[in-house]
Image (cartoon, rainbow, N blue to C red; front, top):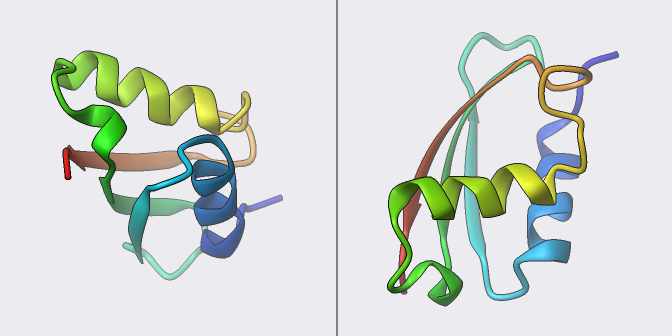
Length: 76
């Protein structure tokens, strides 16, 4: 079952409280997304650490309900 972008945004914001999240459905299938996530929690973290925070916030849905997510992270 595909994961709606509103649920992805909620999962990320529940875990990264100050995150601003922009998500684009790349294929119109609720299964291939690109996300831009900005948070002060990313300041002074490497890109790998930033992405790990995002993947952790998705609570195991990546690769299951969520097939593809391209992530761009930025500090605030």
